[in-house]
Amino acid sequence: MSLLTSVDARTSRVDDFHALLDEALHEFLHARQDLATELSAELRGLVLAGGKRIRPTFAWWGWRAAGGAPPVDAVVRAMVALELLQCCALVHDDVMDRSATRRGRPSTHESFAALHRRERWAASARRYGDSAAILVGDLALAWADDALVTAGLPAEALSRAWGPWQAMRTEMIMGQHLDLLAVARREESLEHAVRVAALKTAAYTVERPLHLGAALAGADDDVVGCLRAYGHDIGVAFQLRDDLMGVFGDPSVTGKPVGEDLREGKRTPLMAIALSRAQGRPAAQRVLRRCLESGTVSERTVRDVCALLVELGAVAAVEEHIERLAVSGIAALERAAIDDEARHELVRLAGRAVARTT
Image (cartoon, rainbow, N blue to C red; front, side):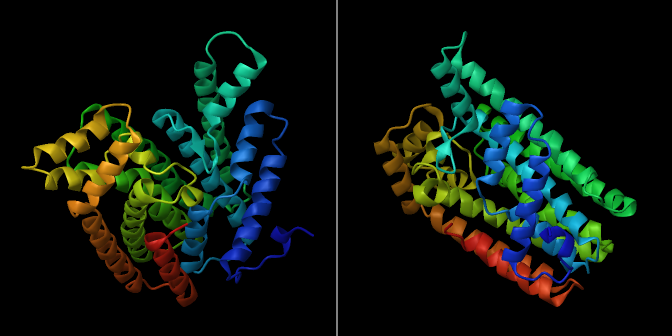
């Protein structure tokens, strides 16, 4: 018997939900394995290779927080859409950032480029790799819509969920575009960097998944407002932690080389704070801008920038901001009239999101 046909709404352990979600992911992708064969094989490999399932988990507890009721199997199947949306974002992001690896394995565009070279196909291997990866991301986005629409949700629940789902997709794309603009325009303001973090990560990682889950359960405006306020603050804190890990993180944990974000010239809040604090220190400013603008960053420059980020107090400032966001996010959650078990779990998830080492 399928787990999805026997589960009830009181599934409490996160591991239980992840088992249900993994089964739903396998079922959805297996049913489409003969469609766009080469692209779907890469997509299956990415989705089923693992991952923390952060977005579906927040959606599940948003649904539970608002008193979610059957059909539970349809709700789990709907949350497959969030993993597919995440896959789209990762694949396209890697092309834009020229990232060679993802989760310790070659990124999608690199895998297709390597295939092109092995088979001695015509034209440019890099162009083929990039183009095929874009199509994998497009397929993931198309199938994300399919997963939500075909999950078997009651019509009224699907109608309620469609608003946050539309907003989530648009905000994710807007955030990515703002990220590109920041590099092109040499944007250095902290305000812009935080806005990118709010749209590119916070909205579609925590805030909108919670909103989606709550909408599926028919939550009222007050509950949705509290959950979204919590989701915004915890989501931005999550991205700020990710920025720190992108510079100082363990490659065995992050799946990327040390200092990868520095090599990619990312205009993060961490770098914006450092640039602001380096005013009046021309040598420090030169090192930071060389890292952001040179296109090729040496190991020595990575070490120098890491030291400056600490020396200038940028790392400490980001840590303090993460703490403030965590406190304000939990305060918003405490105001919500929601299920106590879900509240407890969301507090725990917030702690993991803002203090994670994995």
